Amino acid sequence: MKTEKFYTPIIKILAFFGSNLLVIIPFSFFLKKNLVLDNILMIIINIIMVFIAFLLFKDKLKNQFQDFQKHWKKNLKIIFKYWFIGLLLMMIVNLIINVFILKNIAPNEEANRNIIEQYPVYAILSIALLTPITEELLFRLNFKDTFKKKSTFVLTTGILFGLMHVIASLENPLYLLYLIPYSILGFTFGLIFYDTKNVTSSIIAHSLHNSISLLIIFLGI
Image (cartoon, rainbow, N blue to C red):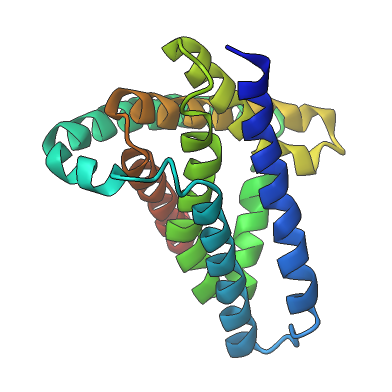
């Protein structure tokens, strides 16, 4: 791995989150605690961020969807195989942390539940579709040409993905334990991306996972 090949993806991640702030700040003045208006504004913000992500990775996105269509049967088998194993491992680790150690849910999950309560329409669209698109572009496609070895790619992108989901809740050092289940999820999406050579595959897996998580929250499980 060349050093500059690692710097470039990190710079793109920082550029994305920097532009995220630039978009959110002006829109925040229009949030008026109006359920309909606020949901619409939050959806617009998220769509803008997806568009920015597409601009950042437009060169790497060429032929991705067409390639997925050609190999969709093989890709779906890989998606479901890795996702089922990853889901099982993540559930076991989460159960251990939630029940026996912290006796609470992950702060990121709690934040998602709050978003669902405040902005239900936005939450469904964002969590189930828009967020999986941006995160897979940032943490999988972004590092496509950075690592030669499969293990290095999967481990690095998975840990970065996990860190993103816990970094905002480090007021309690024990919350770092949630790095494990989120990284397992990141490893899963990394394996799917690497074996299919297609970001559409990891987006589908990510969207499937988030949609099921949403369903569980709505059912109160």
